[in-house]
Length: 402
Image 1: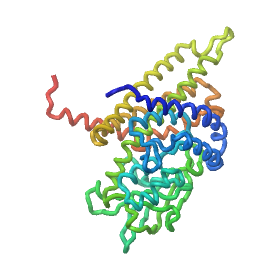
Image 2: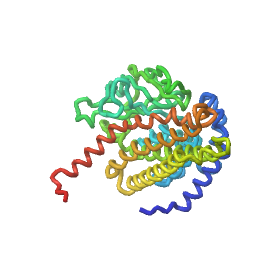
Image 3: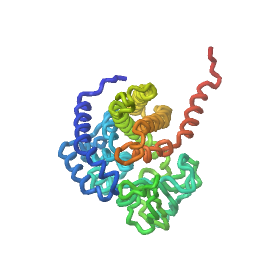
Image 4: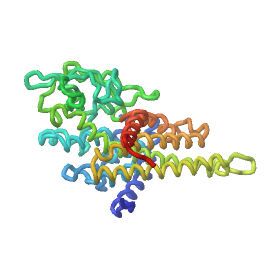
């Protein structure tokens, strides 16, 4: 693996870092004290600026208006954008739209691509991904109660979903539902495109997360599908391949997440170091930076961030070269490792800020509240650890070790 960052990506990330510093971070005080919907007009203006700079949709295909960066290249971009909560949204590569666009590009019909994919990548519409269920373990996507039953030329969908992120204001959902209940467990579910104005698509509420209900893109919807009827032509990919497609979506998606988390680490680390240098703690003018415990946190954080970054870039390279299947162990490893590194770094940064670290005068408490979920979504830490350990232990069955 070549660790040299291509000159093209150095230029792109430099431009992004400058834009984030000058145009987005100054918006954070308003972002932290207003709901997302009220921010949309100003964020749309920033999106227009990004498009004029030709930095829009970095990870999406050029034929649909994106930059066409590969997974490794986009990893560096995602890290730079992750320094602010609004970075990915303003650059048109935010979850869940990014993952939905990827699977639409891979599995969508030409009609689906023109109707849903093109306007999605252009930023004219938003989407949501409806998989997790209230009464089923989210870490086990083969356990699902939502059904899609054929009736004439339609599917009739019934079920109860939640954490359908960004459903408020979305144009369509990609829904995981059981279409083949008698098939083997990994071949029972399918993905189906459901326009959000379809009768029977009922948004029950936006789920409050750590006291914040969220609006528009920043909300997490609870959805009740009640005899929700859509044409069978809305099937995404082959019937019964929902689980397979989900894995294709989640593999690259975890690279996006991990590099975004590393952007959060980078921002939190910078703030922590600056605070340590400036915060006077004794009458003789000594700062927090002179305290050994703070020095240890800074050194440990720097090592943790470097290790997590190298692991993630290596995994992205492996996916790019060998495919998701060959990289699945690495994908599980970075998922729980990077999430925990992020949580440690954010927690240390908050502690260094003391009382201010509990206020929304700075961005760190937002990271603390909203990124705790990183150890839960896309598979809880414990599930990934069990999965990895089983695969590792299988390699030792019947193997002689000296």
